[in-house]
Image (tube, rainbow, N blue to C red):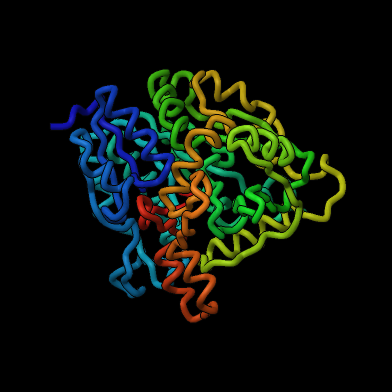
Amino acid sequence: MATPDKTIAIINASGRQAASLIRVATVLGYTVRAQLRNRLGVVATEVSQNPNVHCLDGELYTRHEPNEENSDVTRNGPISGIGVNHRLISELFRGAHLAFINTTFYGDEVQIGKAIADAAKAAGIQHLVYSSMPDHGAYNSSWPSLPLWAGKHKVEEYIREIGLPATFVYTGIYNNNFTSLLYPLFCMALQEDGSFVWQAPFHEHARLPWLDAEHDVGPAVYQIFKEGVAKWGGRRIALAYEMLTPLEVCQVFSRGVGRPVRYVRGSIEVRVPIPAGYREQLVALEKLFSPTEPDAKKQPPYFGDAELEANCPSQALELWEGPRGLEEYAQEIFPLEEQANGRLWMLDEEDEEPVISPVQEESEQQPRDDSDEEDDADEGLVMRGLKRDEEEWLA
């Protein structure tokens, strides 16, 4: 039976942030009630086989069409006619007094986030940590709002409005986003000479916040829970352990992988099927971080609020002093993740045949069919590989 004062409710448990906390919390004696979309993939399998985790399988949304008897159904998510799975959300908080919530774009994120906040308050949750992000348009009317971040900002405002004891973490760019697969924005493209090229719209001299989500989110969030609402209640925390310009990123990454890495400032290239919601995010992001702006000082803060960004990395180091930096990630973890995704560049044998991942093979051999967008929105962007089959990306 779950111990009420040591039980954490967590949603999207196979995402990088949630899985990181689950690994730390369960080792330290906590019980977790974890919502999983499904049990496909290596991370979901790991979570579901953890003896200290009680899994609740299912989506946080429903597919019912709006009608008079089902008034909670909304049409604001990437799939039309989506409602809120109140039954599963209420069940999630049974016996819990802590919660870590990282909402995603599956369903109407704002309505689901509000329903989670209401259920957490009704269940008497003593401390909720919400993984938020900024609505840049709220800071400066000339800045576009990023669709997949603005919803989180609205959920954060609602959590504050209802008086739920909460802390808000803003995560930096994941080290783990980099891949030589053809995913947009963080493709570390392998060249014929064995070097890598990263192309993105960010100004080459503007500093950005970086975080190893799998390694460092768990210990940091655990410390927030440990020190409690008295210290962290109502506060926003910039969870990033390095502030690096794109040029510095490539220098650090190069030292890690032992190969040249070059930065190219340019437009975001989309060469694989992606969900409609993520496509809109990339369009807005390229507008926000314009690849043609010559002045690095005019690039908007990644977290929207310059003061919050100025707290990087001191605020994060106050919570956790053992982060895994980008160089260490590039040296130790990146080759393993690449090999898990069918890449063989890290092997010395010259006669190795390249392995084409299912995603890359599909993108290279099949034309894009816009009629598939609804299915893509449901499926989401996934990393398919030998060990990462069906893992959600950027969650």
